[in-house]
Figure 1 (cartoon, one colour):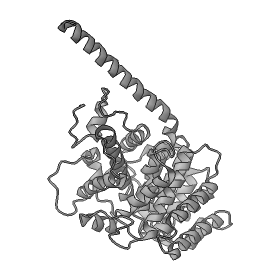
Figure 2: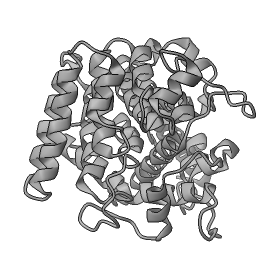
Figure 3: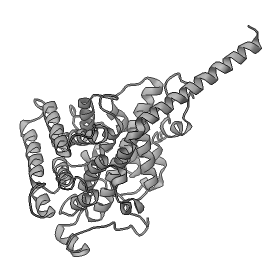
Length: 408
């Protein structure tokens, strides 16, 4: 074969490989598209609950009623400077969780690296820490595209446990905790894990649940700081990827049974019993007469992981078909209103879908476009592969920072 024929044949083969790569990428996207509405609902729903509750996070129920009326806060309080409903560190860290997850997936696809997902989320959290101007600034170029978003460099009352734990420069885990904190800063940020991975196709459900716990344990070392994250992961997974036949209450029961079995023998029985008692109470109260504020007070304030999850379970079961009523109930109490609102929004958003969320909540939400873009990335994931000819330039821009990839 002469050189002209060789080059012609080579170009033909390369074009065929490129077209084949594009076709495989489109098949992947098509197979994932049915989940997009619920993934968007889960991520944006969490930001909505967070933004609604953020202005009243440190207020008592009495103070909330005095400022917003007998029924408490019912609509966004727009930030004067931003001209939007702004969210707290809960959604900031949820977005960075998503960024870390997709960094890890991209590394796996293009470099064959299979490190635990929590390792990549930890990388992302350290970059979130930089946005908060905490500790010495690193000279390393950020690997998270979210770091480039100016609106994410805002001080939104970040949790002291998250700041101090990440400030140590060490990564906590369930086996090697950095502290004994059971604050809700672990559970309020793990939803993207369940939104992205399809149980059975991408990972075993029990592994996903444990990954949720490990992501929370990066900063929160008490079992009641990371066990709720495993439970939430399981509940959201069923909402997004289930067959639609299971009720939310049944999903809560299944999630708790699975997680309790997972941690039996490795954490104190007293902690497991405490978690079970709160879930049982939340389920029972969801069917009882009385006000939401009274019922939520009976569950707790939501400052700890177990209480925050239980309050979100109560609100979600109380109003399983009404996103608005659920998140309004979740924030009107004397406690950690933004976190309980965020977790409730994560749950019902993923179960009902983005389309079921009233437009009034979407309209004035801070950086809604970024939230939707990240939700779409969580849905479709990395469609490039090691040695492949197909290149998604937008994905490369966002998730290949710091990678030396010959394919690119």
